[in-house]
Length: 377
Ligand SMILES: CC(=O)SCCNC(=O)CCNC(=O)[C@H](O)C(C)(C)COP(=O)(O)OP(=O)(O)OC[C@H]1O[C@@H](n2cnc3c(N)ncnc32)[C@H](O)[C@@H]1OP(=O)(O)O
Ligand SMILES: O=C([O-])CC(=O)C(=O)O
Image 1 (cartoon, rainbow, N blue to C red):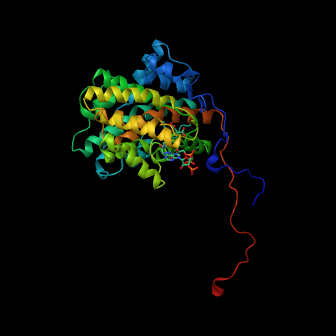
Image 2: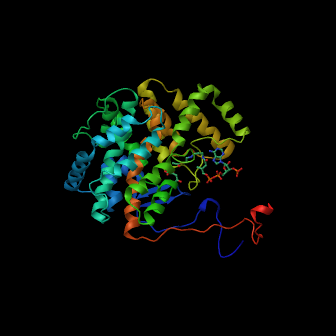
Image 3: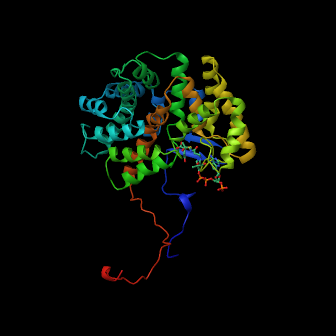
């Protein structure tokens, strides 16, 4: 029924709220966090911690603000015993995003501010989530491998801590820098599906943990954050750069989507892919195994030629993480380790200026049917 609705499939180009956090220009390929171009943040040597602060407060921190914030994150990284116990009890072969979704929901029950919906309490909850999500991801991975979780090292950055918690050893300078860049690049992206679902949940004035649990479930899907794992599985299945074009052509002939390509908003190069391509190349060279980068480059060139589609953020992050030695099933959880900063920024913004988010559906089902009692059917 046409009624008073305007239908846009997938809410394409529909503007749902105003926001100060992230500016996205899909035609020019520009991405700004609170007015700062991501290229300047990355090339200028910002840390992920500075970017999280920026997304929450609208300004970069000065030195004492950054020190206090870094110390707050360091204090919050460890997991309480019940959360570690839960991780130990979960099936070892469980999907890592399903584990994260379950653990974050559970974590909310132990938050000292649970039930306090003041803005101050929500900032504290956000800091706990940013600090603890990487610890959940890495602790479960170690438990799965039959290893004991590692205690976070308060002297390490967010990027370095991830490797330390995963391997029990500190990363190289390149690993820390590359991972810090990846964390910055994935931090926020306007009203992507997972952020939108976080805002929808927050818009009912439900709590921060409920909003983030919704977001994690949404990021998990292969059309969104789950694509980075699918990209690596594709590269591994192809096996050799020389086989890439035939593999892609065959998949396209079968009307399959090639993971890591296309975007709802970008019509040009995804500005994040520019950095991730460079890092993937460097990581492959340092490892002495450049074939994943070469294969990725061949696929990227071909997809642009035959489909006019550009690589998105998930494409080169896959070969980068592979060259850094990170297990493939952790790629989407890593996305969450970064995007938690954007999700929480948007939830805080939603709380500050809330209106229930409730779109309409255009009804296309039958009407005016006559009820027939069960005995007559
Ligand atoms: C962090 C992120 O979420 S980035 C996105 C990660 N997701 C992926 O990489 C998965 C692969 N990509 C896709 O599925 C899509 O490009 C999306 C989901 C990202 C965007 O989807 P939409 O804006 O809805 O575009 P839609 O899926 O309608 O595609 C438009 C056309 O391009 C084609 N197309 C889009 N992406 C691809 C792709 N990756 N491979 C092949 N064809 C594609 C579609 O088949 C469609 O063609 P048609 O008009 O002939 O039917
Ligand atoms: O914006 C989107 O639709 C998807 C995306 O690139 C992201 O979440 O980083």
